[in-house]
Image 1 (spheres, rainbow, N blue to C red):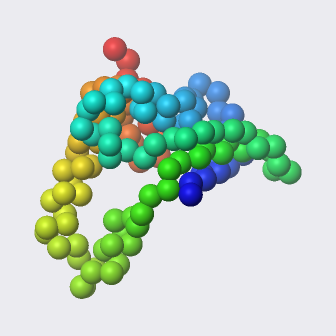
Image 2 (image 1 turned 120 degrees about the vertical axis):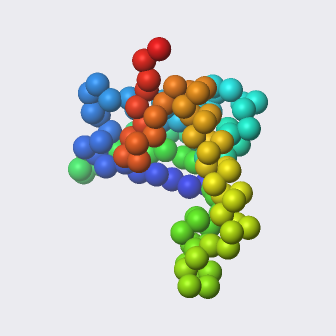
Length: 117
């Protein structure tokens, strides 16, 4: 089982912007021994699909489980228990350390930006 992300046609060929699939490949290869690497979704493949609205980059990922938001929705009063928050925060910080210190990327929420040396 895999997950497929299909980007909008107008985001597939943006000049002077890094390709999302290329960034994900860099992240996958930067330092596999870093403990934060295991907390980042793995890209399996990518391809471009030509459709009636233009070309769409399609990225194939490993399938994951529920999102944190799904867990939160199932909790009493919509709050995650502290014993769940701590490991989630730790995993998130390890992943951010990995992409910042080993991949030289900053995740802004909308895109990842490569840092100059």
